Figure 1 (cartoon, rainbow, N blue to C red):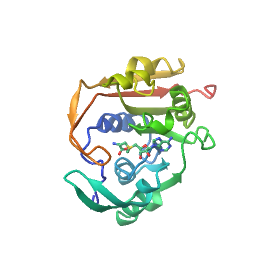
Figure 2: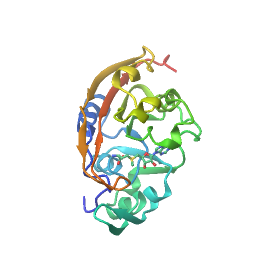
Figure 3: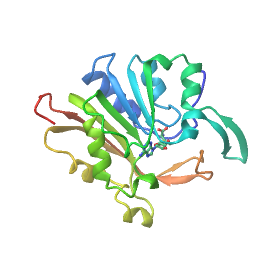
Length: 219
Ligand SMILES: C[S@@+](CC[C@H](N)C(=O)[O-])C[C@H]1O[C@@H](n2cnc3c(N)ncnc32)[C@H](O)[C@@H]1O
């Protein structure tokens, strides 16, 4: 890639999700990315040949602008739209500029869905985590794939918010028509300073990948 996401260097389980995608969906499958940000995952998916539906509520992530970075650096950040144009990947990606929780549920339009550390954002705390997950599940056709990496609780305040969760709790939100393929978790680790968090900080992250039983009666 000629361009870089502001989130390029944060830890991710995306390679594990990509491996599951290669096993479960066709090379030209449609993947929804919820909380697409400036395209850290949208661009590699599109470059790999997938069609992508990118859902993002933050105009800055989509259209770029001035940003304050670690080291007291002010810079102009590219948004997802600029990056797609510069990388000539625009034709493969449909961008939906909307709050995922307020969007009309798109039913079974995708072969797979992915989100990375989106649902713990405070803008989502007014609605149950189960609703966010159910909306994601609805996007996936029978036989398709669900993938999410998410923040696990580290600080005391996180224990009070169900959106900081764990693979065990997440599994309970999935009906039995879903087969859990993989869960992973980290211990506490230090993430280097990045946009939005200008000091080094501590995270704990989880991953869950699940497949919907390939039957037409799964709605
Ligand atoms: C910044 S990313 C987290 C970093 C991650 N490594 C990445 O690049 O995808 C999470 C994104 O989810 C978006 N997001 C959170 N809740 C959302 C919602 N309800 N609807 C749409 N986007 C949402 C945030 O605006 C943010 O851009």
